[in-house]
Image: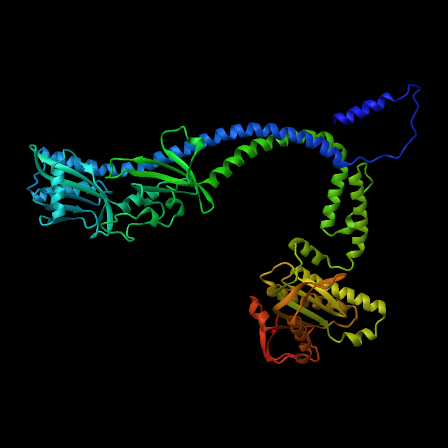
Length: 620
């Protein structure tokens, strides 16, 4: 721009002073629309985008951090509360019954009273699976939720049980023990163990258990973020709960109470402690939970988790992973695209109003004319006027030349075929299953010999108008006119699952319009028109067939031959042509169609065919 201004100043100094005279009239010079738009909009958009993106980047990063922190904090708090609220009541029940025993409210020697208290405790705490009292002599009284019964048995000969009761006798208060796989239940349980004292003497222990399946049910029922999965790890390398997956009965035993982290199917959770993990810098200054980012199998994942202690011999890690694409795409679309788009749209609109006044009319005229061209209605389109803009003027001239050529072109190429090719966007040769129809006027050759040339042309044009209207109404493509015959097909260029039905409906419609036209011919004292129609469905090669300079969108294959022979076979079945329209179809068309009324003629050996063809006659 500066060089342009310097040249302009230099040129102005060379102007000689003198009387002002009118310059000679010159032809109007058109302005390049590309230069006008590039200079005006380009400069404005570049400046606007730089400013908007700068503001949007700062705002977007802040919003991303706040949104992600809030969602992660809420999800972590909800997961922890669900887990703690599930486990704590079990501990409360065990402690409460131990206090009743200590206070003498429950006589542990009264086995029936003890059983009633144990059953009542689990009745009010649905997450507890068993509540058990173990005496120092290892006599066991247990209430079981599923059976709703009291189980009594003696474990005095079990050395493991002896060590366990001795360990509890040495404790002052209860605690959560390690996860235990119970073979009789075929499940892993979490267990709270409360020593019971009476008059400072150890009189037994209460053990409340919660199955891992109960934990899974409770944690899976809680709502989570989209494209995420909640999990609970037991220690660093064991999986207590994985959302949507039940590990309660898969390869577990006394040694492996819960599955190892490396044995699960979820690749994202399996790789959580990978050394390739990167801390989330946006969340590095918060202390309520831990987080990191990791790529697994080409996808990015965000991990949020925190440690929970005191509910087993090892800490639990409660958390969830979130697909990074969900967060990135959503925030980028809402923040950056929204703010930048609004700013650019507003400023561009202001400039468009100023500059667009000069260029809107010819552009709109060209656009409207182009829409008319897309409808293939050339008679409704008018030539475009000259324009001051070079590109628009050249486009208008090219458009006018194209319009003149298309006006001639439409007389030779079916508009329905062109429209379908424009809609489908493809014309490559390929094999498809289509339905082909052949129509022919019975006895037309001797009838035409008694007619003048212009009468023959008028007769055929009228006949073809009736036939092609029925074909195109059902979405068919008229391939060609062969004398007084018409060849049409369905199923290409657009794919039509019901192409056989369409062809049959078109044949029925042709029969109706020919009969109606014959009625008019009879009233006018002219002879009737009798037709034969043949229809066949089968595989064909469809597409552009021909040479480089002369292509024809058509169908090629044995299906065409069979359809034509079906029409010709009407001569054999109805030699005197008593029916005004005689319609035959093959078994392939009948099988591919639905609700078509037709009677079976039988299997016939057509000319040039090795195998017989099943023939049906349409009744409609």
